[in-house]
Image 1 (tube, one colour):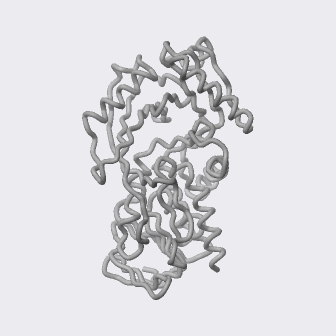
Image 2: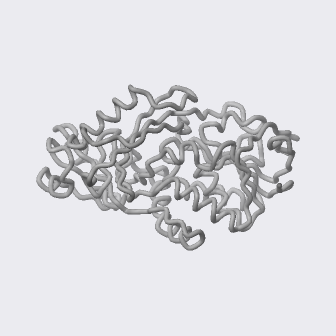
Image 3: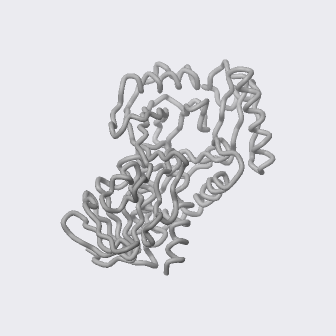
Length: 354
C-alpha cells in the first residue's frame, strides 16, 4: 500500500475512477473503494449523455454538461487504445415525444431555445416520427430529435477508466473502507484504511451516496443523500428506435447486446436498494407511454441503484475549513455525463495545490 500518496481518492465509482485516470500519471494516487468498482450508482445507470435534451437551460451548468459530453469521443478512443475496452460510446441522439397540445407547445419552445444555443435539434411531425421510430407511441403528436446527445456503457466505462489508471501505476484497494481520519489544524494528516494508516497530501472525496458517511473525512453538514433508481431491461426482437426514446422522466435505451433499458424511478427512501412492485409498475407505465407495443415483451432483468443526490446539484471544489480535501460528489443522475468535466476540475484544483 502507498503510505504517503500525493492523492487519496475515496470512492471507486465513475467519478473516482475518472479522477484517478486524470491525475494518476503525474501524481502518486491511491483509490479506495468499499465495495466493487462502479458497483453502486455507476453500473446501475443507463449511460445517457443528455445535454440538449436535459433540463438545464443556459448558464454554467449547461456549459459544464456540454463540455463534458464533447470530451467523450476522444476519451473513448483513448481508453480503447490504452485498455482495449470499448466503452460503447454512441452519438445515438435522444428522441423526445410529445403526447398532447401542452407537451407540443413546451417542446417546440425548447427546440427553438436549443437551436439558438447552437445545438442540432430537429422537429419531427407525427408522420416523420412514425417513419423514424416505428415502435414509438402512435398517439404522439411529434417529437424533437436532439441529435448530438449520446450514450455510453457505464460498466465498460468504469472498467476502462480503472484499467487506464492502473496502467499509469495507480493501485486500487477494493473491498476496503476508510474507517477514521486524523486532523491537525485545517488539514487531514492521516487516514485509516481498514487497520492501516496512510498520510496522503490531498484527499478527494468521491464516495457517491455514502460521501457524507465517510468517518473523519466528510465535512460537517455535507448534504449528500441516496436517491434510489429502479430500472428494468427488455429484450425485444428489435428496438422501437435506433435513438433513445424519452418522454417526461421515462426513457428507453437500446444497447448493442440487444437489451432495451427502461428507466427510471427517483425515490428518496434512504439506503434501501431494492426493486419493488410499485417501482416496476412505474417503469411499465413508462413503456406504455413510450412504446406500447412492447408491453408483452419479456423482462430479462431488474435492478436498483442509489444515486448521490444533493439539493443544489454536484459538489465539486475545496471543502470549507479543510485545505487538503477536495469534494467530488452529489452528481445524482449526471455522474456518467459529468465524469470528464469533474476529473478536469479536480485535476486543476490539484495543480493549484502543487
